[in-house]
View 1: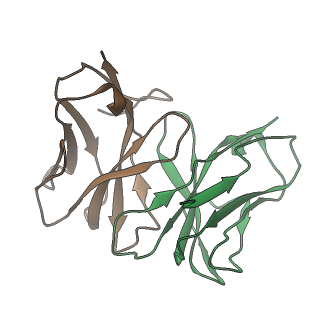
View 2: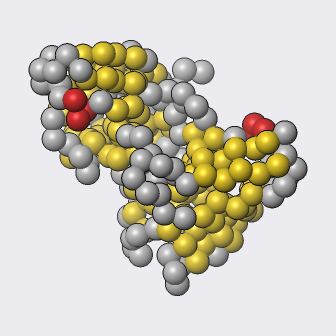
View 3: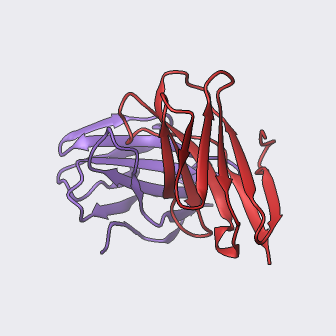
Length: 113
Length: 113
């Protein structure tokens, strides 16, 4: 969902559950959409991407869904583990410019053992 | 495997002081970027470079200068620090703008008092 002020959207799940993190993007012309994971005190780390001409892409334990009609992106994490606890950002890459990414505000995922 | 290295990791400045945040990458990447991350927000692009000698402004360039004299280094300069520049700064690099994976450094946490 949308963040309000300085507060990140948060998602708390039990270990082993599936997690779904959502993101609304703004630019209809974006070519790629990317999910990054940021652990506390570290820089963002690439998880998975999807091209604008696709609606689903799967990786290891992760699936990204793209709905261009409503400009919505989601990241599904299967069998969530404590090591998945982090802030997750969606980002847009417009015009083959992955050095000019536009980031969403992030979602804090907490996995309870 | 050093990747993208940022120094220092932490810095406290007084208002009006100047400093340079260092960023170096050893992957021979042409494209480098600087982002800032404020609480509860995603990363915002400050400046970027598409090669040695070529830089351009991002979304929030005011108060910052950059230069790119070598492929490896992309320093970010604050000429006269202001409390509004208190943030975490991330440097990123990539080799191919059509790919989506950008590599991020560990960040520099800057506090301006």
